[in-house]
Image (cartoon, rainbow, N blue to C red; front, side, top):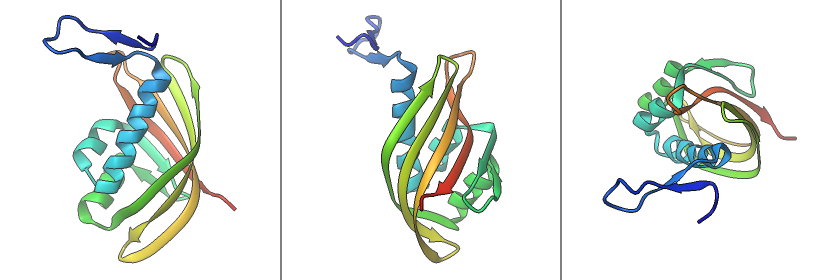
Length: 141
């Protein structure tokens, strides 16, 4: 068994828990991508910290509620989020992710397609739950 997994024998089924913070964040990043594609505000609400701040490639600031509202209203809809060049760095409390993302979708009914680099900061709470606290996107030129 890989060293970044542990087995919880008290469960009736075999469950492998990811204990390596970088592996946990890779899994969270995957859930975040799928939730954004589906505008799944329940999952987004779980993953995003109440103190979240996002600066987009135009310098605009968004809170957690702003982000969730865009998805709930349908103003923002992603059609594709294609990650590449992931780089994760950090420790047991904080992981910084840099990832290139080819994105497409609609915003306010207008289609968009961009090549962006996202930087995201994930923080672990005292109970071990990871949440996204900061995100920033920049255009790749």
